[in-house]
Image 1: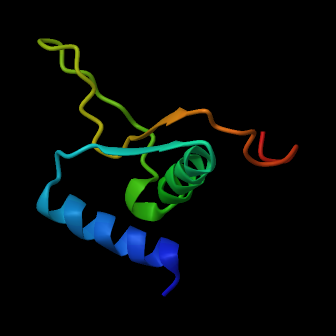
Image 2: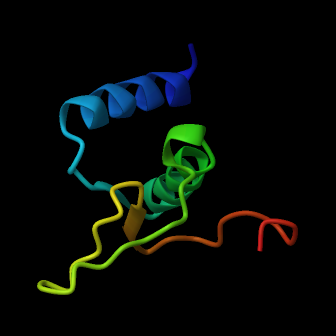
Image 3: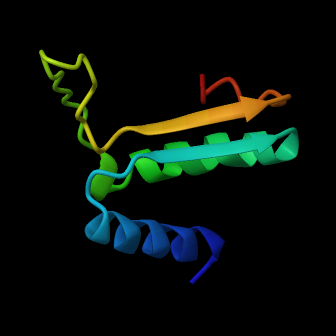
Length: 84
């Protein structure tokens, strides 16, 4: 297993035990770029690929537990022309 495979296995196990938990990647500078790539790589996996969202009318909170957020600081340009 490579690094992403290890991260993926840990996150899948965590989500099985904590189904309502949100996934957030974060980083600064090169770590921010890594966080973006990790978030995208996770999102294209079958376990996280759901794009449907539901909103609770009473709270207005998004209840889609397959969302993956990435909050970054000082992120360099990530990807190439085909990425965008």
